[in-house]
Structures are given as structure tokens and as C-alpha cells.
Length: 147
Figure 1 (cartoon, rainbow, N blue to C red):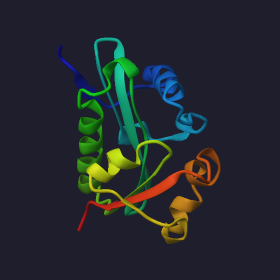
Figure 2 (cartoon, rainbow, N blue to C red):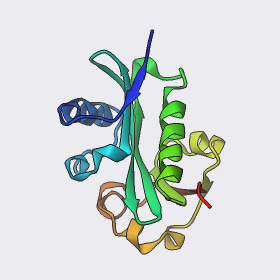
Figure 3 (tube, rainbow, N blue to C red):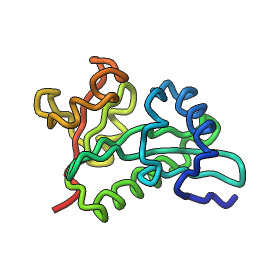
Figure 4 (cartoon, rainbow, N blue to C red):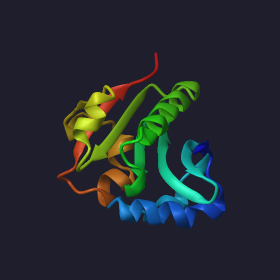
């Protein structure tokens, strides 16, 4: 089966929101995001995975990484995360942060390290994702991707 990764279009937002909701991830601020920094993967009209970057100068929040339940275990999330890291480097983003409640081991396997909330730049801490949408119990992780 041929999977295609691409930048989402406006008509993809409803399917993205459904996949994020199915995965227990917040969707409240999705419509305010720059979709050019998101990637989706799927076959035809079927959405298999999504992920995105929320940029703050040379730092970004890796967010909304989700894979459809039926498609998990096939490396799709790894392709999405790898593509987003490449985009970050191409865009001059040096530091990636993320919040997770259930995927700490997965992101550790991708080179992310657990950090204290107090060590996160103010621009990230003030984002809706960090300050209100994700619970305080979420693990904060970091990876340097740029020079």
C-alpha cells in the first residue's frame, strides 16, 4: 500500500481533529496553527498519521503526533517525526520541545530527553498547548536538532 506524506489542506482539518481526539490529544487550538508546519500521511482519503510544529523563533513545540489505531506499529509516526525534525532544521529551528502523557519511551528512543518545566523557554511555556491544553502531569521532553 502506498502511503503519501504531505502538507495538510484546510479540508483535512476535520479528519485531523478526529484522529487527534481518537488519540486523546487536544484539538482546541488546531485551527490557529500554521498548517504548513504540519504533515499528514495516508492513502487516498484515509488519514493514517499526523504531526506538527508550533514555532517560536528558533524553538518549536513538536505537537499533535498521532497514528490511527489500525496503523500503529508500522513506522508511520517515526516517518512523521523524522520529517518534522528535518523541517525544523531547514527552517532554522534549533530546539524542539514536546509534552507527552503516554509516549515518553517512544520519544526517548528518538533522542528526546526529559527536562524540567522550569527549564523550558518562556515562549513555549506561554503557548496554549503548554499552559492550558496539556495537563501539568504531562512529561516535558527536549531535543536539539539544529546548530
